[in-house]
Length: 449
Image 1 (cartoon, rainbow, N blue to C red):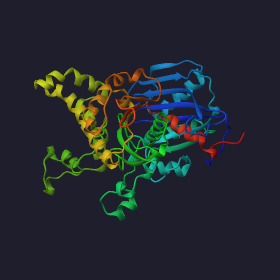
Image 2 (cartoon, one colour):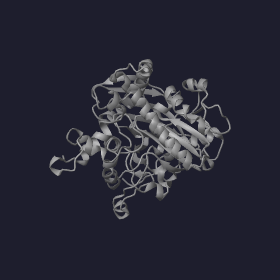
Image 3 (spheres, one colour):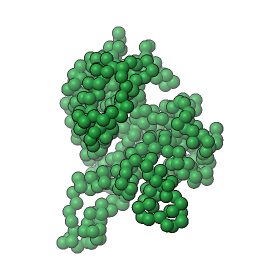
Image 4 (cartoon, rainbow, N blue to C red):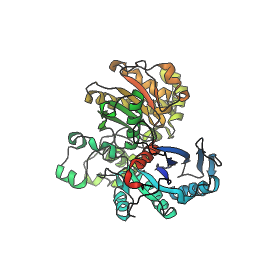
């Protein structure tokens, strides 16, 4: 489908496909369209969140903005949802039936695509761009495939709408070559695109803009260390408004551990992990062949804090860690009881690795340390624990503010004792509105009505 300009009366649908979830937001353009960073050019109409897609039944939620109308839903079980395509189909059916919004009103559909390779600009979905994204799926196995299934379903269900891919990797195009490169044969690296790409870019772009507004500073003057902490977790060093370094690399697997991802491991670990009962040997007759797909399955889907505790719910891990704290401190905890603290402390330790590194890379000139993502925004205990050792760098947490983040209005909340420097902030990130905003501001997507 070639690029086409839509009427400014048309709506923007933002679709964010996770490994087992689907977040959808619907927007309309603000008229006249705002052209500044201080004002959003779009207005939210409704949001939908579909979770547990890979298990049955899936959970469906649908909520309206203040000016919307229709029937809301809160975690309704839906047996007919069994994959991302059927989840999207259920949303469209509900949208027309309960919110009285015709599919023909949707002008553009913005899709969050995790890996964009060397494509840094949004791509209108055509046969060629679809195949390009499909080719990159092996580098983001938990996400690109899910996004493609929704794109395919969207193009079939909404033939009048234009699907546009927005890449998480785009924000990190500014990472210098000496940071993005790996110490391998560079002819092979360049031929195969083997370098650090970085991810969570839509989130980081939103956070940078939100923090600059909160601090009343130009984005290009800001040095930030931002943590996007969720089931997938990463850290980013932002220097003068641009990505300098980030914890994820060629794929989202590297860096911090996640719900099912291992994060950084010794590259040889996977061979010993799967070698006969972990036996280390150079005897070829004793070796077992390990395929890349098997290794990726283990490190992407069978690792992380789920492998340690048996749950992907970090809130549950924190709760159990608190409940068993006395036994662990006294040395009387069983292995099963001690696993909660192990998972929590391991995550915090890996966060420290990147915070210290990025503080040095920024020369100690850091305007704010920012927590974001589901865990970063909600976990009082995690923020408190991380800040325990950062006093040596000048970052100090104000406990009362930290405990009341959920009650505070606004996108950005300060939780630090310092008000002028070494600030600690919590930012409620929103990848959907970031895509919609970029779409609204792209003149070629809209006709001059």
